[in-house]
Image (cartoon, one colour):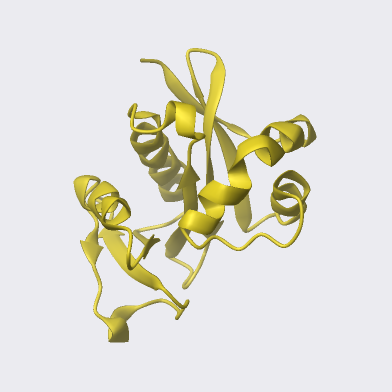
Length: 154
């Protein structure tokens, strides 16, 4: 399996519009408006978004904030795949590639959200080496979301 990340571009908007809204809602990722334009319009220097590609086909997205909640940390906000590409390993590989990108920009700690009622999301992060955090350790409070953390190897 050949999985790669590439920056999201304007041409990805209609592809995102076709599947992202219900997936994002399931993991409590906020979208105010059409998924493609909402997400693409929110990207910049600190918030980055990537298409996850497998063997030349778009199979998911990865969104993160660099330098959040601190200069040496980052927050993965979303790893998502359309239903037809779910549970095929692309999201997990995309998350690892995103960690590498965030490490290259100075992150030593990465936080990731998991819906409190969605056990498979917690399991996803645990398989990647993240640990659940107690409330006092959370980088921020989002209703219905528990937080995970991974300290990257140096």
